[in-house]
Structure formats: C-alpha cells, structure tokens
Length: 436
Ligand code: 5AD
Image 1: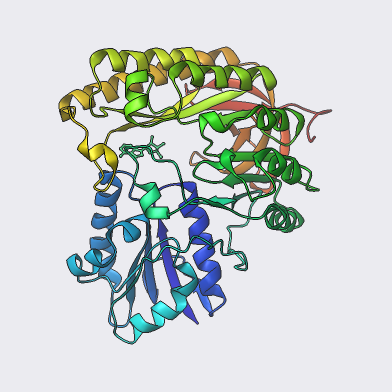
Image 2: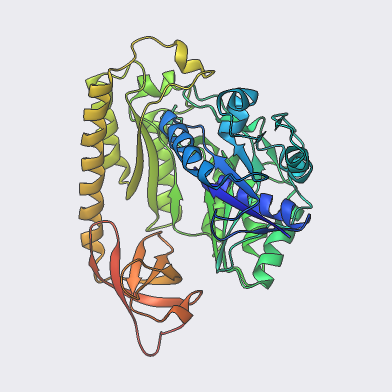
C-alpha cells in the first residue's frame, strides 16, 4: 500500500480537488498519509491567483524536500502547476511531476512514470472533464463541497483562473443530485456547491435556479450554500429559487472587487457599483436577514484616491459582514499586465490597511447589535480554545459553544451571548428547543 500526502493551498475548489485526487489514487491502492514523513508521494495542490500564494508554495516545497528520500515522489498539482507547467520542472530540480486541474484522472499512471525515474508533466486542457466517475475521499463530517462547474469563461482582466482552469463547463444536474443524495445518505446535512461563477451554472437544460431547487429537495439535506457567484448572474429566477428553497442559507459571498465604476470597467467586471448594490438589495428583499461577504482588490492599475474612497463607501453601502481583501498582484498572461498607471506598492499597502480597518470596524458594529439573537447553528468542529466547539449559523456567523465533541453534526437553537467582533460566543437554548 502506498501512502500519499497532499497539501492544499487556495480556494475551496482546491480542497474538493484534493478529495478528488485521493479518490483517483485510492482506486489504485493509495491511502492518505497523516503526516508527510514516510509518505511515498508528496503532492502540493497549488493556487496561482496571487504571487504571494505562489511564493508560499515555493517556500513550502523547499521544506518538503526534507522528506524526499530516494524513491519518494514530489509533485506540484493545481493552478500553479497549470500556469508554469514544464518551467517548474526546469526550475525546481526536486520536482518529479507537474499536473494541472484537468489532468488528475491520469495521476496514478504519471506517478508510475515518475517512480520509474521520469520527470513528467500534464497540463492539457480537457474541457469535458468532470471526474464524474471518481469517488471522492472526503473528511467525514456534516458538511461537504460539491463541484458543479469547472473553469471560467469570464475575462476579468486581473485574473489568471481562465488560464489555469480552462473553459467553463457545468456538470449534468442529475449527476450533481445523485452525488448529494449519496452524501445525505452518508449523514451530510450541509452542502456547498462550487464553481468559479457558480450561478452561471447551465448544463444545457437546467440553470442554477433549477439546480438549487433540485439539490434543495434532496432528502436529509438541511443547508445549501454556494460559492462564488457572479453579481449579474443572479437572475430573478435564481433569486426566486433561493427564496423558495428552504435549505438555501441566508448568506452570499459576492465578490465585488472594487466600488469604483472606472475600476470595475478596467477590471472588465460586467456591472457598475449601482447594479451591484441593486443585486444586494434584491437578495436582501427576497431573503430577509441575508448577510454578505465579498472579495476586494486594492491598488488595481489606475486606482486613484477617489476610486479607493468609492470602495470604502461601498463597504458601508452594501453592509458587508466580512471581506477578503487583497493587494493587486500582477499575473503574467492576464490582460491587466498591459494597463497603465500601476499603483506604487506603498500606496496599495496603505489602502489595504485602511480597508481592513473599515471592514473590521463595520463587522464589529454589526455583530454587537446581534448579541441576544437566537439562531440555528450547526456544530461543525472543535475550536482551538479549550474544549469548545465551533458552530455556524445560516447567516454564516461562527459561534463558540460549550457542548461535547459528540455534538458535531447537531443543529441547535443558540443564543448569541457575546462577540469578539468577528465571531460569537453562544449558549444552547434549553430545554424545549434544544434540538430542532
Ligand atoms: N491580484 C489580487 N487579487 C486577486 N484576486 C484574483 N486575482 C487577483 C490578482 N491578480 C482575488 C479576487 C478574487 C479572489 C479569489 O482573489 O478578489 O475574487
């Protein structure tokens, strides 16, 4: 039996892809290693979206080489593998194998070649590939990721993903439903549907509204989430499906990228600030209490102080509860490389700090007002802090609960008793409403 250690960087789709690779390799007799020491195969599943993500991987590969005894294979997979391909083999002598996101089906064969002493790469695009027949190896638990769409056909000028993940394609709805049924039969009660622009899902017959309804109807499924949607793909039909499918949760992660119309245009985002706010308003109206998080880039080429001020004011106007904030990172091969007026790093850093401060202050303010509310929370996992458990509300707030480890997977009515600003402490409401 061979042991494989996979380290995962980047987005949720990479987490799902790692589960997929463990499935592909599991069929060939590989098992997942708990630690890199002593593994026969070391794989790093990488992200290419920003330079610092790639630098981290390069640093980590240096460390992993410690475990690369004779016969041990070191491989780079994922988006950085796709972006750099054979260049990685040239520049990092310790690397034996480089495989992009469409090549995982051949992983065992390629590992065989590597074990025979070859240095191999596979960065072919396979726009039909959904790994439909691969049984993923998932961490046991109440929640699961389900990839419903791979690749991306949008052309945001900052983004490398269309290059690393190829053209957009959606899985057939019936296949997705079948997978969710199997998960539900296994005890999973919350599913997150994944796609680069997940709400543009279309399998030729069914759109995202159909998908939400069909998945939401699966017996045993209590919560349905999805990430990441694209603002203008929230059609009235999708919003209606969200409002009328009880499993759909009251939180949307909706990347805005900038609050300035001039910058949105340069980014080739297909909406204005006003349109974005309309979408947020429409969702809030359809699902009262809905919360929003977002992704924001600062320091995009041409961004002025006034543009940045528009981003700051959008944070408030949209009422975000959370934001992932990034300094623009130039990616070779993206259209934005050619844009003029690159923003000096110190200015971008200052803006990033100001933005983070604004987002945190707003989250703290909003969360302070929520103390005392009662919400349904799913106990997900142990917290780092002494014996407590972490639970998540439908609005995506994390709540520290003093409940036993055996409560993982349980749904409780929980009163929010305090907040650190970003997360909550809570108490289970007893006795009548203890378990829903
Ligand atoms: N520089 C900085 N941030 C980026 N993102 C994508 N490409 C870049 C880039 N070149 C951010 C976007 C996206 C998130 C996943 O990463 O905000 O939504």
